[in-house]
Length: 134
Picture 1 (tube, rainbow, N blue to C red):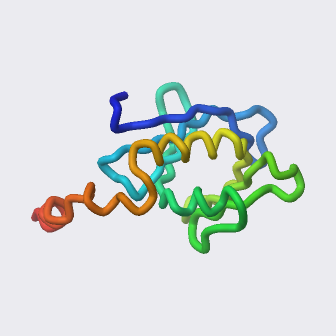
Picture 2 (cartoon, rainbow, N blue to C red):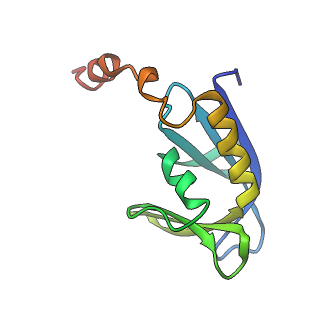
Picture 3 (spheres, rainbow, N blue to C red):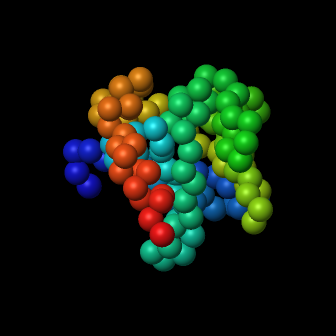
């Protein structure tokens, strides 16, 4: 890991599982608008969800998201827990995790790239060249 990347590790609860699952939040300045939440599935194998950093920031204080990823404070568990709903054609999951851990992770991403300062880090020409390769 280098100075342009931050990670936060914590155990999360997946709906329907009695044993907590190891998770990894990651952020890189190479993709400054996004964060990735990964779940350890098997030895060395991770299931990753990538979504907007703004969504996680909004979800710290209230319901956020309308699509495949939705985050909100967990009203049943209390303000110290967040709930995330993940939906895909392959299934649906509810993840509960620490608000404090998520806030700490967001603060570390802001130390690298403050909100609103992402634009100059995005190489639009490089992105267009990449997606138009045939």
